[in-house]
Image 1 (spheres, rainbow, N blue to C red):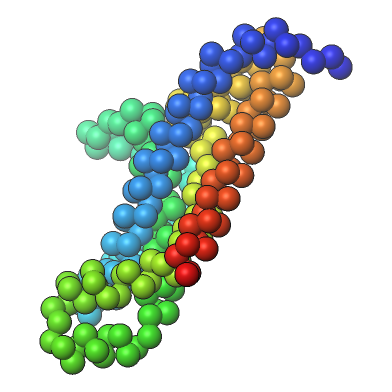
Image 2: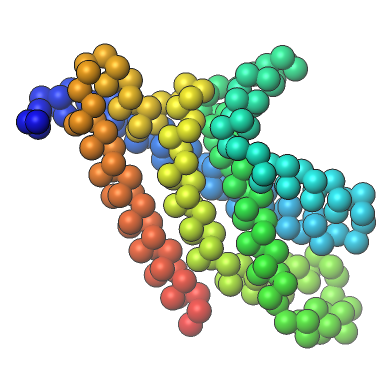
Amino acid sequence: MEWDWSAVGDFMPRFWDGVLVTLQALVLGSLIAFALGLVWAMAQRSPLKAVRWPVMVVTEFVRNTPLLVQLFFLFYVLPEWGVTLSALTTGVIGLGLHYSTYTAEVYRAGIDGVPVGQWEACTALSMPRGRTWSAVILPQAIRRVVPALGNYVIAMLKDSPMIAVIGALEMLGQARQFTATTFQPTEPITVVGIAFILIAYPASLLMRALERRLVR
């Protein structure tokens, strides 16, 4: 089988559109996952059962149902309730919500890893609860969990092709659409595979460098 460079040239405009969608979904989804995951983790430590138990039920439900089902629900079911979102917005929210339940566990482990003496010292100093979290507990916990959070960013990148099923054509979605019209799968899918490596590998190196810097 010969490599057709003309097919690569024809695919590239669609490819760059797909790269833009992929990066938007990855960056915005990661921000949602990191922020919402922290909210879930802190809510699960609430002394109020009315807060703690509903959060535990929601996070377990989301974590144990497929991302694909969640995307379909957000895109096709919510409009029945009067909430209509664009395909990309749905993809971003779906990825962020799904992975927030995993980052919540990462944050929880980091918080549990903070020595008990730190909590006791804050109590002895009569430090307000909000100040205890923001100034003492979270800075220590987050430093511990940066590598694990980075792993979930890579995992989210690899799951980003799923948003194509609701019409947000990221890199692989663009390749599949190109293949359907030209019947040339080799070139576009190979280009997309290389692109995923070129995005994921530098990101993993960045996370390793950040990890080394934080543990100094």
